[in-house]
Length: 512
Image (cartoon, rainbow, N blue to C red; front, side, top):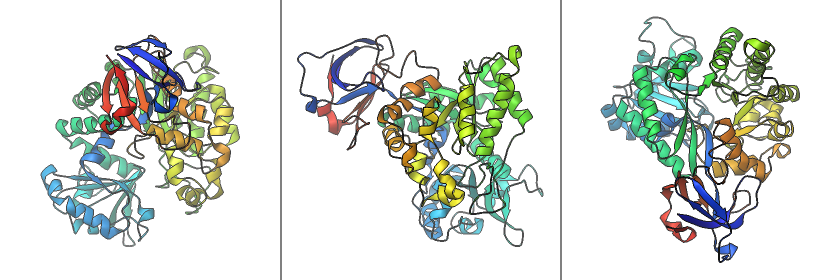
């Protein structure tokens, strides 16, 4: 096959007219003959990579109820009512994308309000950040069924102590696991298929797939891994368990993912070194001890596995860095990773950072999995981050300082928290609300190509267009590093076209 267009061979290269010859691998990259006018060409770039997705949840958000954009409790109720029959057929209802801060009542719906529209089966509605939720009465009973009469930490109560249905922290995590265990294999596979097809339609050829929960059974792991293995895009699985024997048992090279060290800004559970500006006295939640975290990092390193954990607040990130520093200083027992980090251990999100903390991250060589779209959604002086953090919004996602310090940043979406859309992610990294923390176009593109490939230990086979690498390409109408409209024309994974936008066929110059 021959694909002709303005070709970007790597994130720091200019787009030049070229012809790429490929089968499953790239066989030749050279000038096209004759050279067509650049204005008539599409842009061919290395297959885009989303290094941090939750494909099961992203697919479930498409299968079940999307509550994004809801503006009132009444609208939430109506959307639930519209899907009532589906809830009865599934035996449960999941909702995604709820933003209580954007409801006119500026609060969560309570369980009684959900009971008014769906009472017969359990309902679980995720806050948009995936770190708190609200359930109806049946959902609450399901969540506490194993310990009747005992209210786990995080069950919010009203002024009389009665549960409102809002769950945070331990109660939220427990309820989320219970609901996921009720999903049948067919639902899981359907959700993974939807998410992977959505990824392909957004130009993605590889995803970091964060899946599972701590008490996932081997049978459930196999369903998840089988679903990822048959997806049209390549998936690098991160099994979300503290037990490193699980990924080893399945022959994987990475452990963890969003293993929670803390929560999120939106749910006020991200662990901060100072109080939340809109809730004095609250500094968020630290979910694990140094002992537990260090034991996980040590076990992963001794097993030769890359470790990834979730930390958003500065207090949580400092804990992760501190534990890495402790292990790095141990010397021969675990190997000296100082300035190298050969296993490419990751921190996911790492949103609130100080200068000294950035220096420590750089010194150890930790890789950060970042989500530029978060800033577009919640960053700046008049959005959620500033409400929660006050002037500390200026220190969220400090890409310029991180890049200047030599920290490697792998781009992702955290889908379904924000949609899988690397082109939007590239633009978001370049167009920050805090202009002093923007990335250049080349740096932003690298986040979703070469740096993401490095974070997934796949740079030898993808992340750039080079002879011998997998034939992974994203074909766009324009260079994503420049201003103006930019749409996905086609996506090729391993030489196979896994997505084509028929309305833009005139951009695709493909020959057998």
